[in-house]
Length: 333
Ligand SMILES: [Ca+2]
Image (tube, rainbow, N blue to C red):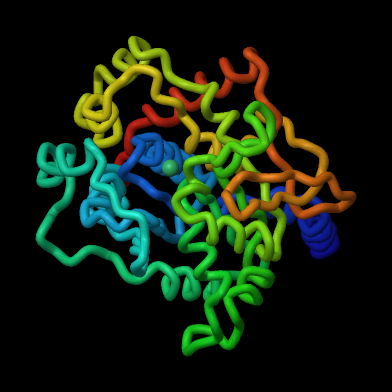
């Protein structure tokens, strides 16, 4: 009997452990300029669906838009999904600031419905110390950065000195703790060389810092990829007919459909389903002083960009996005 138990134990060690060992949930930081466009909110909704499915663990949401409405909006969205305490990182000045045309309106309509006590202090602190703490407390090579806005926070993290949180500099912390990084920035395929993409344009220096010095592999979503993916408007209304008071959908209606390109959803979706997109050869991304970008092929280069999706791939992506953003909050146990 003892022999049998021992044999079973050996087999478990060989195969069972492999079965239970898993890359999931992926530990992520979501860095967003939420407020200008509404796809940042849809992407956060998609991330919540991924959390409910056991695919990701959201360690922090960090913000690169100084509007006072953004942290409240993020808390409301997190609360809608039953996760009101996810840490929120707000940017130090100077920083882009835009109230946009949907955040305050959706907060006025829905904040008291989903946030237990809207007057309670936000779970918010300065972005860079929060990022440093999350990294310092994480296992090595375990954190994925998802950036769907301006590069401000990540560049400041990169340049942060050793402090009481960690004896490592920002660059050393990233090198030790980060896994891959997925960014929406630049354009690699369908614009003239002098084109300056929106996310880059708001903080060109920061984008250049990331491109020049980020120490771990990066997948770049060029503007041209997400610009091709959008929900057919009628379909979106039908999907959300049973949940009209979902904050991100309420904001979509205020923001103004149709033709809302889904740039930011590509980033978290790619993390879990890389098989939906194809990547370029390896190389190196850099940004000129005017913010236009260059991709230089390089064997074993740090960077790859997403290849323009075909019509068939676009249809598959839009379908998957629709399923995920309309996934209802996970019922409480
Ligand atoms: Ca964005």
